Structure formats: C-alpha cells, structure tokens
Image (cartoon, rainbow over all chains, first blue to last red; front, side):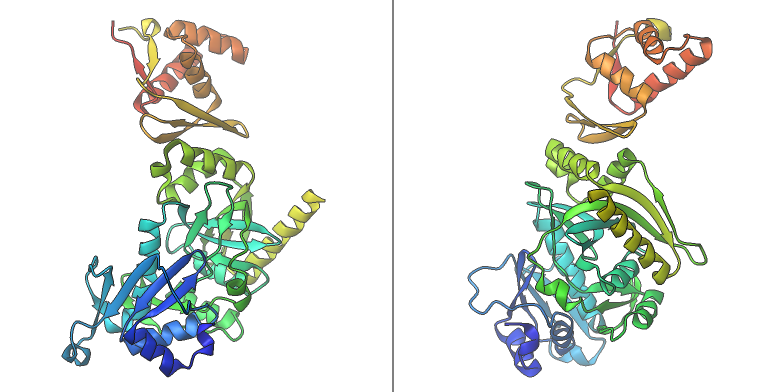
Length: 308
Length: 97
C-alpha cells in the first residue's frame, strides 16, 4: 500500500504508536515519531512510497521525539534516536523533516557498506545513468530537480549506490533536498512542484524538499548502468558549457566523493576503474536550467547515435 | 648521494594495480590504500622499478630511449623531479647503501 492511500490522521497515529515501515529502494526503514510536522511531511513527500504492512525486518530503526511534553511549547527540539542511541545533538522542531532526511542519509552512509557509496546525484534515461558529483552548493540538486521533471528518472539526489558485483546503480528516488535560492528556482521551474516545509537557519541555510516524481518511485526496482560522470557547477551569468574531462582524473575525483572507497581496498579501485572506463566524463557549468537540460538531451541523442 | 647513483624500490609490501585511461595511468597501491594519477613518464618509471630496473641512470637512459629523445641536462632534471615526486607520493623509496 502506498502512503498516500492512508488517511493522514491514521498515518500520524500509526507513526506515533508502532511506527511505519517505509520501503525506499533496497532499504526498509522503521520510523517512529509523535511529531505531527514530521508525520505530515513524510505523508506528503513519501506519498508514492510503499509501506510494508507485515514487517519482519528493518534495516534501520529510527525515532524522532521531543524531549518532553512541555518542551513542545518552548523552543521545540527534535531528538533523533538510532536503535535507542542518540548520535547527534537535537535540532529545532521546525527542522524535523530536514533532520529526518539527513539522518536517513547518515544511516545509509554508515551502514550500507555492501554498496560502493558516493556523495553524488544520479539520474537515468533509457537505462543509462548520469552520475552528478559535486560538493554541496554546486547546484547539483537544482539540476537534478530540473532533469527529473523533464524526462530523466531520479535514482537519488544525494547518494549514488553502486552494486560491487555488477557495477549497476541502485535507485532510491527519495525527496530532493533544495537549499536557499534553489527552492524558488525549482518552484518556478517545476509546474505543480510539491515542496515540504522550509526549515530556516539550518547549517545549510533554508532547506526544503521536493517530492520525487511518481514514475521514479514506481520504477525504484529498475537499476541503471552508469554511462556519464558529470561534475556540475552552477555559476550565475555563465553560458552553459560541457567539456570532456580526462577519465583518469575523473576516477580520482569520483573516489573523493565516495564514502567507502578506501574500505573496499583493491576491489574499490577495480569497481571505480570499470565504472569510469565505460563512462564519458565531463565538467559542466550552467546558470539556467533550460539550457542545462538541453545539453543533457543532446548527450542522450549522442549516446543513441553511438549505440546505433 | 648523487641522484645518478641513486637506486629505487617500490615501497615494501606494495602491490600495484594499474588502469590506463586515455593517455594517463591510475595506480592503486594496496599497501597504502592510496590511488595515484601518473603521467606517462612517471608511469614508465614506476613500471620499470617494478620490473627491477632500479638505478637512476639506468632508468633515465631507458626512459629516454622509449621516448626517443636525447638525455639532455634539461630532460635529466625533469626525470629527477618525477622520481622525487614519486618518492614523496609514497610509491617508491630510495635504497639505502
């Protein structure tokens, strides 16, 4: 059953009582929280995701709680618990959904070492994936939000997961994290954009999340083969530019974005080398989403021409 | 010690895994867990040291031969710099006499 098929008040009640088992790509997450703001945001932004009705297992058991009843009236705070441990300091109450997303990322980054994991967005077209690797603030998520609302499929806007056995990319299709100016840019660009609550004054500034396209969520079991590695950068006023980037350098740069490359040792090098070998690597600069998307469309056309 | 008399080894216990991508090499050193980007000349040096050609002079002559160039003072200086950079990167080390 999809979350959206559950009445919101029933969903909030279940989330508070026994929790819900949320399926996102290969992960099953048991979330429990009495915080209505968080529950409503999950109900809205994860609406197309399935909940597991008779769960036997969860990869992660997480809770988000207020410190006590009275504190909800005075500078509310949210505490995150992972298996009943509290690994992080609490955050302001209105950061609850952003905290949920960061904490799920943290769970995956710190536990899912059966995948090679990179801090990179990944989108797919015709079975082939483009890995978008860039440091925070480079316009990676804005670009991802634009692409997945113009024919590309969202695999992830934060975490690229590679299966070490066959080099395929694993989709998760979770909400896209937008920061500061990009919130309005995407709201204007994406017709009917569904955005979650805006958390202001976070360490990253203002943060809001865009609901992932339904098609991306429904096709979350379909893996993709990486075909492009792109290092995007938003630069105001600059013309769009896509330049080939040496593959050897791309390997090192991508390895810098990987969380567990060194843990994999020689195997990590082999996976990364094979991945880069079958991809084309580029540096990409853009200032307007329309121009950026045109360039990505031409990449696809070029690729179809190559295959034909 | 004069650089021309210097002799070189790979770092002990290092197994190197190579990947050539376009005209550059990437080498993974299993001992350090580090990945290195090597230009063609550095790659030639490491490859030869791996094949037990260890003396600087020998390395320089063979590399110049492979590159089909004369071993001028300028080229020798370039080669010495490359060897020093490889030493700093932890891929090779100078032999103690």
